[in-house]
Amino acid sequence: MPQLFPPAANTIARVSLVAGILLPAVALVAGSAITRAPYNTKVNNPIDQPVPFSHEHHVNELGLDCRYCHTSVEQGPKAGLPPTHTCMGCHSQIWTNSPLLEPIRRSYETGEPIRWNLVNSVPDFVYFDHSIHVNKGIGCTECHGPVHEMQITYKAKPFHMAWCLQCHRKPEEFIRPRDQVMNRHYVHPQDHIDVGRKLVDQYAVKVDQLTDCSICHR
Image (cartoon, rainbow, N blue to C red; front, side, top):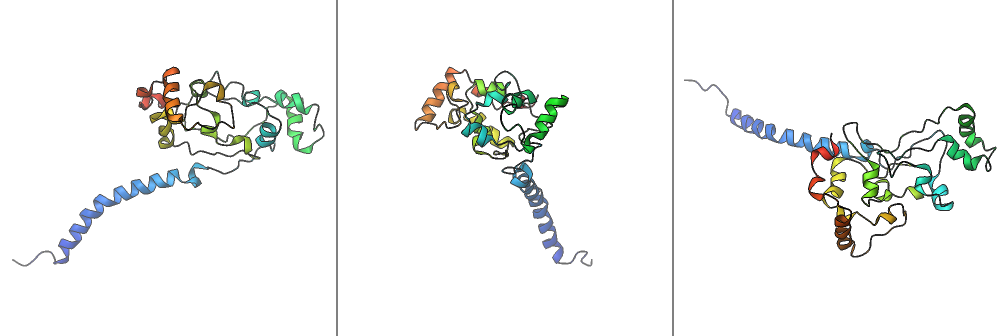
């Protein structure tokens, strides 16, 4: 009986089997790398706003507390954005003729709110509550980075699932005393792991539940 397949067919078959195994793995690794790349996560990319607001000026230089503008950060899932009358509490007295603040003045006169561009967000299928993190001792800078040093606000952390799980798996490495949550200059002490474990117990952080899918995906 004549040979049906050439000798190279065996090599082709082996290569096909190996490729069939490797290609999906390579595709998964490449896809994961692309989704976590700064180009996709938009980390460190300043976001243009209707009004060029400087956190560095308002927080570092003037000493405003985060809660002056983000009033619901301790009580609700969203930190909140300041209404125009909050801005005008100061800017009805200072910089009253600045062209940069014309959108603020117009908003105050017309009642039309400023449409700020969102800098930090999670996908629609992720549930995130600011208040639970604040009240369990997670500082603003842990997620938002050095906002107090930003002339133009940018996203400082990637917010992908693996990044969130670093804290959910080992909260003792990130937790701080509640009265230091808003402290933009807070530095974890050398023994912060031991301190963190005590705070995890004190604040009743349910470590065994933090990695349950239902915590973030509801």
